[in-house]
Amino acid sequence: MKLTAVFKKVRGGYVGFIEELPGANTQGRTLEETRGNLKEAVELVLEANRTLAEESVGRAKVIREAFDIDLG
Image (cartoon, rainbow, N blue to C red; front, side):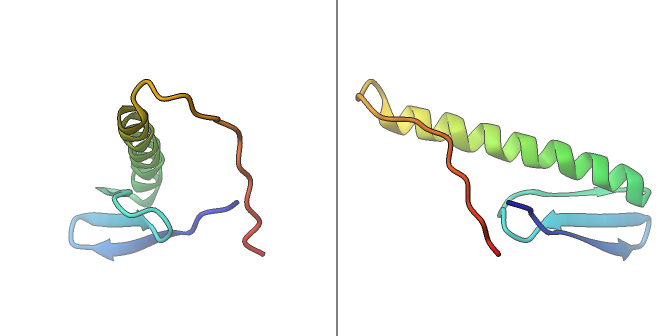
């Protein structure tokens, strides 16, 4: 699976976000800085989502497995 990063030039630098992952957005002074910040934002969003999922499951017995998707 590949995600789509979108960058827009704004006063003072760039803003960026991932189209497929709500909440993964950031800004930076340069495009390179914004790319790095966006990578960190994606990691934080995924970590937060994992924590929320673990909390919602609690102590219930569940099956966890890798899940790959081909978006064509």
